[in-house]
Length: 236
Image 1 (tube, one colour):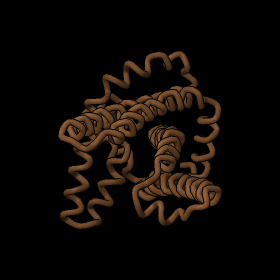
Image 2 (cartoon, rainbow, N blue to C red):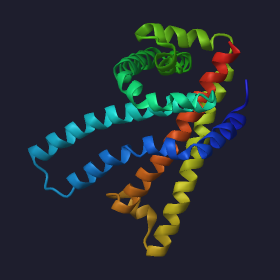
Image 3 (spheres, rainbow, N blue to C red):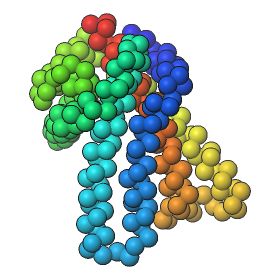
Image 4 (cartoon, one colour):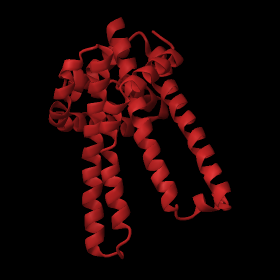
């Protein structure tokens, strides 16, 4: 199995080569963000709270759809089956419910693991890390997706841990450093204390910067995790 750095490098190249497609999907996340920003200009009331709740639910489904679509695009480009790209949006919509079901099962498993001991939760997190991919690419559903993921991890637990957890940490850490540097530079230009701003209500420009950063980062995370899944599956 390739190292996290090799897979990250491979994922970055794929991202750069197909950035317009990946960003086209992840940009949908900005719609719900814009809706929340607009809602913030209205005085707090029961109606505003109800709209915010509805938007939160919509955001969950939009995010799921985007992640599924990004994963499907990743596999299409990794396998050079570009003729399949037109089907992604429609198929991703049909997969929202089964992916959400498996995600809820994973959450319940992790909560159960934490209630028992930290170790079971750690094991479950690695065993079932490919469950959503099993739904998207292998047609698995529910418990079957979790079991298939566990079978994929069997015999390569620590290598999967290193790639999934370690590689994802590297990406998030790099993103955090870059975002912090950009925020610091903007704060210096404005002549304000960044720490003071972060401890209070976040200014709109920071919220916008974070939203744009998430839109840029999400495709890379999904591409990377898809590459790990494909590597493990092909090795098996």
